Length: 124
View 1 (cartoon, helix red, strand yellow):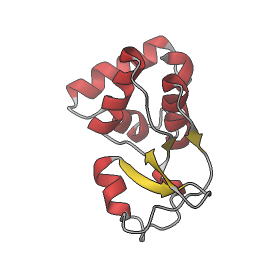
View 2 (tube, helix red, strand yellow):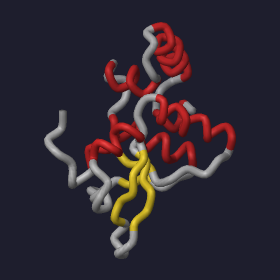
View 3 (tube, one colour):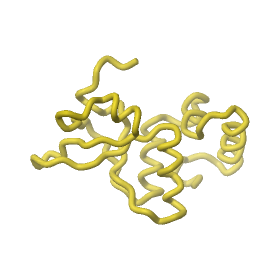
View 4 (cartoon, one colour):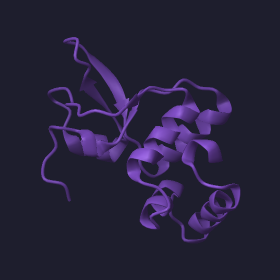
């Protein structure tokens, strides 16, 4: 795991333990403490999962509000071919669920940072 998130073993182990103590998810802890940038967090998750990392602006498919991406961590996006694909921008429990797929080998959708979404309302 450490090679994907560019954190040494001790830092990652401490982050996991402290996130549990503080009753927050690992991604929230890492981001809040500035231990990793959001783009690098998602890039590392995609790499660990063997999933595509979407590192360019994207648009959610019509009818999928930005809030759905934030609340569920998954939405459909325009894939540039006139079709649509599923994209994940997981936070919280959704991030941890996808992270577990590293160990189970389950397939994961493409991963992106929600800050690359082009059709979102003013960020909160």
